[in-house]
Length: 394
Image 1: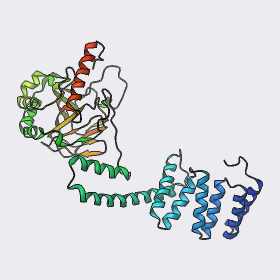
Image 2: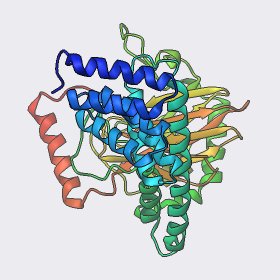
Image 3: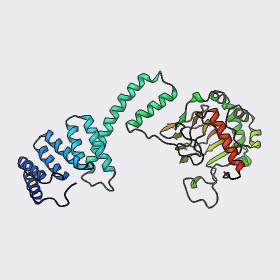
Image 4: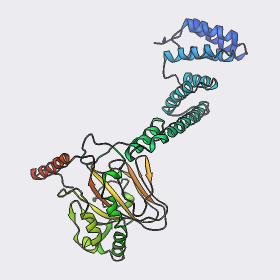
């Protein structure tokens, strides 16, 4: 531990060293700072001053030794990391420079306010880190490209995410469930199409489904309602701007396991396509299926869903240019007639920046990573919860 009060000899030697350095006598400064360090060897500041003298003398080895000594006193010594990073960068020692700059930038990010003289140094560090990790990312992506042809869809997506996250180019998102969480399921943003062999069949019905939606919207009656409808007294939240507005509208065919027969009768092709899908049937809970309409220049804010026991499927029906969808760290553009499935307990958002309506058929199915036994377990769990009389109303 550093002395609370530096010895007088260290203070005097340090004063003489600073004066000598300011006078341009780096050799004398090094001698004085060495004496100061000898008098107070647990002072990181004195070690840094000694490093400055060695830098002025062009003695890189001793400079780095003094900086390492300062860091041995306190690994949180930001300026020691900066000076060490600068020296390694000048010497072309990429790995050591990246490690030192990474430490410096990380410590700088913890400051409430960055001193003005320090900002350009941290900017230099950020630039170096970006350049270094960019080179590593390009090299790793090239090596990955040689393997990609032999990988499955899931392997390729996980490999890309690994490389990007390992080099700080994307965040890995976790499940956030507002309701039922089933442990140890993979937290994958988009599910592989291979889990859903029926997708091609419902995609083939896109034209008929879209035609039924268009006819429905010509005269929706009470079938079209705001998707967001908050209870009275709910505090303001990310949903306030969409509350009870048709900016994000929905026409439900099924809702929490209950059929909306009026809409099903008006959309027989859609009803038949949904009936052919091996989805979840949980009384009072699933399935849900609806036409989702997003008006021009409307955004659905980033949010997470209620349970990871399901996968949410989108079948895009009307997609003008300027629409997009993000789940976690991956953004996709909807393609009319091209379905995909995702885990909605991972943060996701949607937007329509166009001047026209965007429409998607949305429905839920079982999370494909659940086994048949686990699905049965969940069915019995919900049935027992409902039978207990204490199930929380949705």
